[in-house]
Image (cartoon, rainbow, N blue to C red; front, side, top):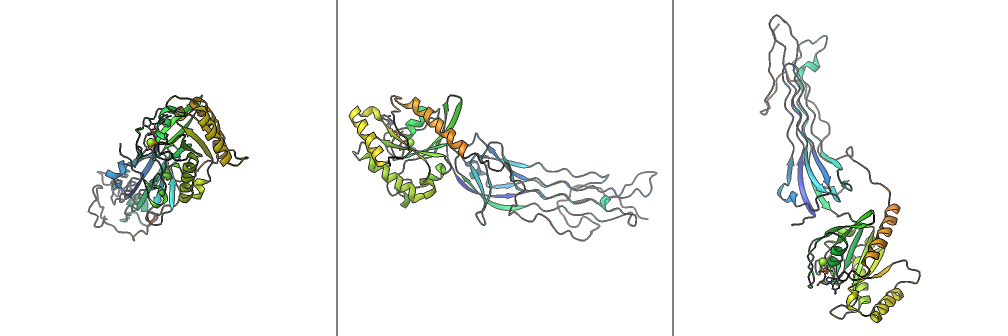
Length: 385
Ligand SMILES: Nc1nc2c(ncn2[C@@H]2O[C@H](COP(=O)(O)OP(=O)(O)OP(=O)(O)O)[C@@H](O)[C@H]2O)c(=O)[nH]1
Ligand SMILES: [Mg+2]
């Protein structure tokens, strides 16, 4: 499946329909009076979060979202039909930015959230609205309001509780495939994983989401390997699980490897580097007890004595230590979630969008429809006194 995490799109909501100028004209009913209906509302453009999506690839093929316009008003006081909203699904974790100034307009954090990115224009009033005691036959009808248009940037930052980081080949994908139903590609060469994978881990009745991202290498901050490209996907994780191979095939030192990745995380973002860590020493099936004890001791020594960072030793190949790890990590995620329980706003539908004008100056009354080529409705039966 193709993966895309940043797109630029153009959205335009529908214009409102024009109001109609019409007069009631029926046998035996003289001076029937004005009966021009209002125009219908233009369609909104709405983004809807869907938990079944995890890429913005659909927008590669649909970069212009244009909602339909409202129908014009018609005689016999008939209001024009409002256009249906144009809905487009986005994955949970999508950030909507105004392309002009980069400001965040909305952040989709839950499935089902809706955000109106461009509101449809209201319909114009028909002439029956302008009837007064002194003007019984108004020939004024208003044009519909224009829709809004704006260029937006959609950025996907996957929402997960735990992000797996580490060198290529550390065993991240194997671990996620062991603890969840995710089935990422696994192989014994670096950069097997090229796009993030998500897995839902079940710990009793509690479930949490783990994200596996491509491996980092030394100099990732300067663009080496796949660089930092995918680190944004663990920016919103509550904690980072750092995997270190117990006995790397290139005979490098696990502690040095750990320090190097930590330095890269810091170079990317101090805020990311400040997230709580969980150190996982992987592939313990290839090491004897002596080596395991030594590595554990080395890590404990490297961390401060009062450090609360847990160090777990496990093997995805033999599942040794995996079950306990799932439960302990689940408890920790639960704790972190309760600490960060400040809910994001449900909906920012009324947030100011940068799109177009919300109100529009209405031209002075024009008795005719004007030169609107789109005009497709309305009957005009002008009563001449
Ligand atoms: N013996 C042993 N081998 C393992 C274990 N976990 C992973 N491996 C092997 O290590 C190699 C790399 O595993 P991956 O899970 O693809 O590593 P990764 O960290 O996702 O690598 P990238 O996607 O390249 O960053 C594969 O050949 C796995 O079979 C383990 O617990 N024990
Ligand atoms: Mg991988």
